[in-house]
Image (tube, helix red, strand yellow):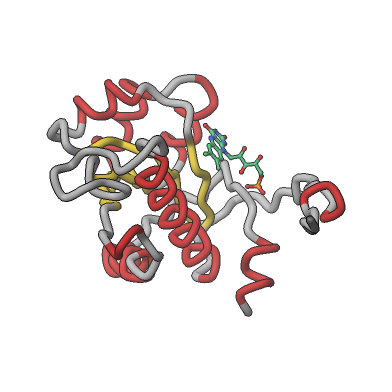
Amino acid sequence: MNTIECIKTRRSIRKFLPDPIPQKTIEMLIGVAAWAPSWKNTQTTRYIALTGNEKNAIAEIALGGNNRSITENAPLLIALCSEKHISGCNPDGSYRDRFGTHWESFDSGIACQTLCLAAHDLGIGTVIMGIYDPQKAHEYLKLPESIQVSALIAAGIPAENPDPRPRKDVSELLTFFHE
Ligand SMILES: Cc1cc2nc3c(=O)[nH]c(=O)nc-3n(C[C@H](O)[C@H](O)[C@H](O)COP(=O)(O)O)c2cc1C
């Protein structure tokens, strides 16, 4: 699969086969995500893999509704975390400018999509979940204050083949600026 095909055929997957994702495959995925660009190559994204009881426990504690059942049904949950006060920051940890936390979120987003595309290339479906209780997820994972949970990603072999969600036309997205 070439890159453009990979980007265009990825879908958010919310139904999975029960087959576990081998540890070696998870390590490979993170090894690919590590190639995501980041602010001054600071590489502040961290990944915590949860399976079995731990995955179901965080689902019960920090997720509700559809996201909880997606996670319970998935063989793997990845908590995509980021080290705070590094990306977009001065050496003393203060934010460089009014962009504030923008760049640390930006780096996490790039890493997140890199991981999802790599997974798709390997036949693994993912869904990025932004609706969860970040405080409860942080507490359950026993993370220090310096690390935040940026997103939760459920993953597994797809048990569905959803139609593509509509995308806006390029004419709506793109303008050419001329003075
Ligand atoms: C930041 C972010 C948060 C999202 N949160 C959720 C979520 O909590 N639950 C869910 O089922 N999907 C979630 N999604 C998936 C989107 O609904 C999905 O990407 C969008 O509808 C486009 O569909 P596609 O990914 O299949 O192209 C999220 C996606 C992003 C990028």
